[in-house]
Image (cartoon, rainbow, N blue to C red):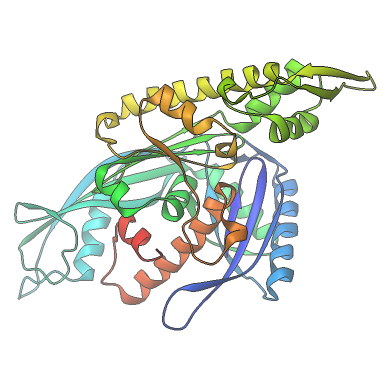
Length: 394
C-alpha cells in the first residue's frame, strides 16, 4: 500500500502484484489531513486517527486487509547532498556482484551526521571501475577497484519517527518512508526527460518540493515551506472569509494569471461570523492568487540557480501536486522560470480515476514499493536508476 501523508490530504492506495509482472489497483481512500503542518506531523493522535480512517476506506474499497505501507515524507527538514565511496574487489576472479554493490553503497553512505538526522535514501548516480566512469550497471564486470557516486537524502529523525508512530498507532506497520518528490517523479517523469535534465516541482498544500534529475539520476533536492494553503490563506484574508470558503472559491473561480480572466464576473462571498454576503470581482481573486504563485516561482528560481543545475535542465519543468491544477499555472511557470513546462500526471494505464496530479505521490509510492521488492528479490538490480523505474511502468 502507498500512503501519501500530506498537509491538506491523506491518500491511501491498495495494489496487488500480478503474475508475470505489473500490478492492479484494488482500492483507494482519501480524506482531509489533520495534525499535519507544512508536511510534518504536529499532532500524532489526530494524524493517526485520520490515517486509520483513510486506510479503512481503502480496505473496504478493495476488500483487502492491509498490514504494511510505504509512506511519504516531506517538509523543510529534508536535505540532499552528494558523496562517494570505494572498495577493492577481493574475490579471486575480480567479478563484481550485487554483494560488492551493497558494500560500495554502504561506503558511500558512511557520513557523519548529527544525531537528529538520518539517511532515508541512498541514490546511485554513477559507478567507476578502475578509473572508467559513467558505468550504470557494474554487476558482472571485472575490476579491482569499484567507486560509487551517490545522492544522499536525509531527514529529521524526529519528524520521520513521528510519521512512523502515527502509522503504528493507526494499527499498521511502516515498510519505509519515501521522499514525496521522489515518489511523484517515479509516477510522472519520462525517461527522456531525465536524460536531458528535468526539474520536478511538487506544489502541495504546505510545501513546494523541488527535485532535479539529470542522466545520472536525482542530483538536487529542496523543500520550500510554501504551497497551496498559502494561496488559500491569502484569499481568506483578502476576501474577509473563512479558509474553508476561500478554498472553495479558489477551486471554482481561481486562476494563476490574469490572462485567464475571460469575464470579470462577480463572486458571492460569505463573510465571517454572520457578517453577510457581498460581491467581489473575479479579477481581484486572480490578482491575489497570481501574486502568491509568482512568489513561489521566484523562490523556486532561486533554488534552481543555487543548485548549479538550472542551465542543465534542458527538457524543462514538470509541475505536479494539487496546486498544479490551477488554470494558467503552467504558463506562469514558463514566464517566471524561463523553461518549458508541462503538468505531471501519473503515467499508469487503465486508471482514469487516478489520472490527476493530486494522486502522483500515492501512485509513485506503489511503484516504488514494487520496485524495491524486485530489487531485494533479485539482488543484482540494487541501485537501479530513477529512469529504469520509470521505464518499467510505461
